[in-house]
Amino acid sequence: VLFVVGIPLCSRTATKLGVPDHPAIVWDEIVGYLLTMAFTTASLRSCIIAFIAFRIFDIFKPWPIGVLDRSVGGGTGIMLDDALAAIYAGLTIVFIGIYHIVKDIIDILIICLFSLSVSEIYSLVSKRIL
Image (cartoon, rainbow, N blue to C red; front, side, top):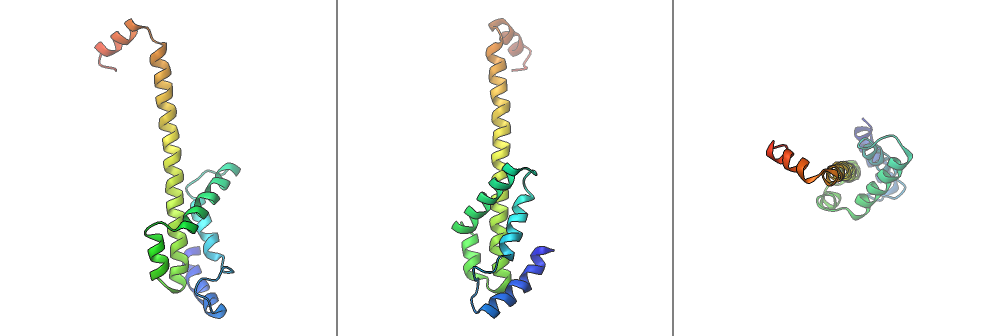
């Protein structure tokens, strides 16, 4: 809803200011940040990480964000590049979270394996558990 409302809002503001994507237009930034937050948990740490991740993708505009930013005009272009930056940031946050969960599980398994004796490991291998 905020994205859709932002298209005509940003378009009219840009027209009145006479600049395609004036820095004073912040509706797209707000919507982008809120979209990034949809990928995180409600904690101060998550809010800070989401903000930093969103700003990185919004500033550097990796492909196809930069292409869309240059080729799509008006309110749609203003909103679209920030929405895409938010999705990139959100997916990055999710990927990092999954990586840490998997890493923790692997670490626990390694600790468990090293705490087993040779005969216990042989028993697990022979039962095809390992």
